Image (cartoon, rainbow, N blue to C red; front, top):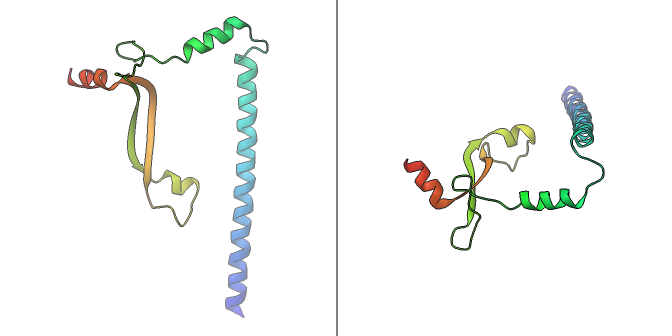
Length: 123
């Protein structure tokens, strides 16, 4: 009987932890949504003119961060990034099928031509 009551206690403890985690996650998502709304209200205008749309389309055209030239079929752009092993995924979302460490990608967001980056690294 003592083992049955101990396993019941373990299950109720685990259920309580899951409930607390769910409540923390819900609160975090609500805070993030509030921050997004505050940011949008502060930085984005409600009415967009054609000039704003044209400026946004010009911004979406990527240029090499080194030579400032656009991409072409002969010289496509790539995104600078760094890959490393990380244990973050298992810490954020534990799952028995996840490996202890997984590959994590980090990027500064700079687009560059591969040839420009190669030349830049040599200098």
